[in-house]
Amino acid sequence: MRYFTAGESHGPQLTAIIEGLPAQMELTAEMINGELSRRQGGHGRGRRMQIEKDQVVISSGVRHGKTLGSPVTLTVVNDDWKHWTTIMGVEPLADDVNPEDVKRQITRPRPGHADLVGGMKYGHRDLRNVLERSSARETTMRVAIGAVAKQFLRELGIHTVAHVTEIGGFTTDPDTYAGLGTAELREIIVNDSVYCADPQASVQMVQAIDEAKRRGDTLGGVVEVIVEGCPPGIGSYVQFDRKMDGKLAGAMMSINAFKGVEFGIGFQMAKKYGSEVHDEIAWNEEQGYIRKSNRLGGLEGGMTTGMPIVVRGVMKPIPTLYKPLESVDIDTKEAFVATIERSDPCAVPAASVVAEHVIATEMAKAIMDEFRSDTMDGLKKEIEEYRRYVKEF
Image (cartoon, rainbow, N blue to C red):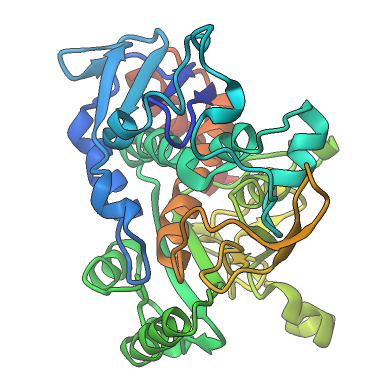
C-alpha cells in the first residue's frame, strides 16, 4: 500500500490517492467523514474549523460500497476557496496585473514555521507559496487515508484509539483509565472537549487553553495512540528499515509540530533498572504467549509482540501567535513582528486524531507487506491461520 496527498491550504481542494488496498473491503464516504469531523473538533480550535466542514468524495476504486483493488481517490473540497480564487488561482496572471499587487503576499517569515527555509529551498519570494502546502491543513487527507486504514484493520480485528494525556503541563492520571480497552476509551473521549480520558485533568486542560487564548499565546501537549489486536511478528529485526517501531516513530514525527515520540514507558526507562523495564514472558493455553507487563509498548526487536501497541507523541505549541514573535522581512531585511495568518490556542486534541490515523495507516501498510492482500477474504484467512500458528508455537 502506498499513498500520496496533494493540495494547498486555501486551494480548491485536497486530494489523496491510495494504491494497494485489497479488493472487496467495505468502504463508504460516511466511514471517513466521521473521522474528519473529529479532526475539526476539540476545545481550542480556531475560526477555520467553522468555515470548513470537511466531507470526502470517493471518485475511484470503490463500487457499490466495496473496494475494487484499483487506486482509490479521495477528495475534500475547500469551502473557503471562493474567497481565494484570485490569490490562489492556478492560471497565469493577466498581462495587466503586477504580481506584486496580488493580495496577501507574505515576505515576513513566521518563527517556528517552514516559511523562511522553504522560501530559501524553492526560491519563493512570496512565502505564501511555502505556507500553503506546509500548513497542517494537509493532515485532513492524512486522516481520510487513516480512516480507510482503520476500516481495513477493523475487518482484521485490530482496533485503534488516541487520547490526550497532557496539555500545558496538566497531565492525566493513568489509573483513571487503566485496564480500559480501545472501545471503552473511545466512548469516554468522544464526549470530552479535549479528547481526554481523565475528567479532572480535562477541566484543567480547558482552563489552561482559555488562559493561553486570553494571553494571545498557544499550548502544546502529549497524545497517546493505542493499537489492540495486532498479531505478533509484524515488522522485522533483520534490517533497520523494516523495524516496526522505527516506522511508527517516523509516522508520528511526520505530523506537523510533533517533536518527540516514545513507546511504552518511553523516556522513563532512562531512570530505571532493566528489571523494571523489560516485560516477562508467560504462556497459557487460552492465549498462547503473553507478556506479564507492557512497559515496552507492544514492540520488541523491531516487531510487534501481540500486546497492545502504545505510542506517544509530543506536539509543540503552535508557532502562529496573536502575540507574534519577531522576524525579518526578506525584502527589506528590517525587523518586524511576524505575520498572523491564523492561530488556534491549542490543536492538541485535533492532533490526537491525526496521530491515531497516521499510526493506523502505518500498521495497515505493514500488514499488507506481511501477507497476501489482493482480496480481503484471502487476507483474513491468512491472518487467521497465522494467529493459530503463533499461538501454538
